[in-house]
Length: 180
Image (cartoon, rainbow, N blue to C red; front, top):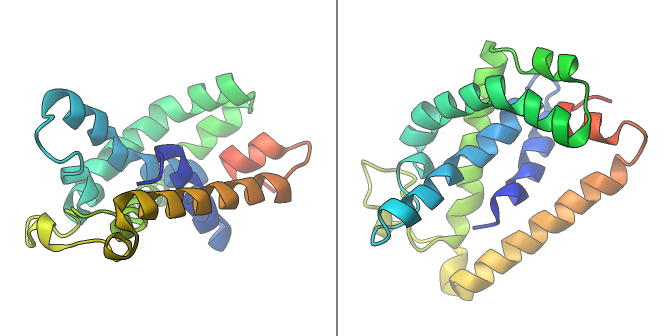
């Protein structure tokens, strides 16, 4: 899997494809499935680290709910503190609306879609399909490490391209709010 922040470019691309989507919701939604990874490592080290939140059922329910809550209450204070983006504008962008909920759901689903090609264990269709029966298409070709490296490098290049294309005085507003 790409390191969690490397899921950001997909959320940004989705917000560029439809200005009606919420960039904060897409960003938080795209990070949410990986919240379960450290929990699994600590509490259940003998189980796979991708479970409920890496399934469509979990991403669209628990994942979306968690993303909406985190977007509403943590996104604005964190981004305004770290990047100096106007807190009022962030608060407005993080209001709970149907668009925010949809964006959180899409972010989580696209996180899963990005992870599928490179995992030998994919709970994406849990509880209907055994997660060990869905092997990512890149795993037989490159192994887990090779697939992970390929996708991570691709996302780094995509992320750097975003930084270069939008480098101006409003860079952080553009990156965290989606403003022009």
